Image (cartoon, rainbow, N blue to C red):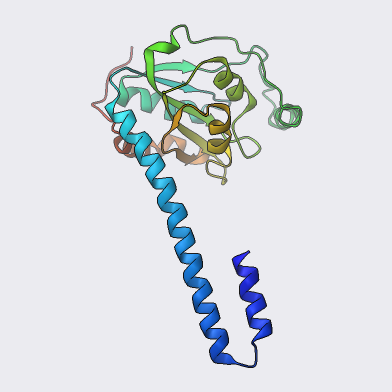
Length: 222
């Protein structure tokens, strides 16, 4: 909308170069201020959630959904450096191993807003204060199986820190969708890693965990 206003100002005051310049300068200043305030708001909210993650004394759960194995790499790294428990989100009905067929299946799920049944469940979710939630970005957001997972438990008061693998969309709309499903949870700063670089992501994961105050010494996992 602000850019539309700039265009209108230029068309109306084209003959008066000085006036146009002043108007454009003023509008650009408003745009910069607006973006700055929006960014600060997000950073404050994510920072607060990050501090809450650091202050928690309970256990960490690293829950993840992975189709091709890329997201699993990030999850295993996160578990190693937090001492968190690994939990794989799996559907009762497996997706096709054929990529094109899988795309059709997941597109249909998205269109129907489906909730695929899960094959396994977290036994004592109440023990966890922090949940690191991993998934690939499918059709701009989380796989529908992750929605099933989020709706199965009470996340009130818990910190959820999302991480994803993607092909260029970053976190997409997944954080906003997460907040809608779990409005009483605290969404911490997320991590987005290109799927093609998942096997080179250890430093990114460690840096992210450090920001959340969860980074610790690497632990052996038998």
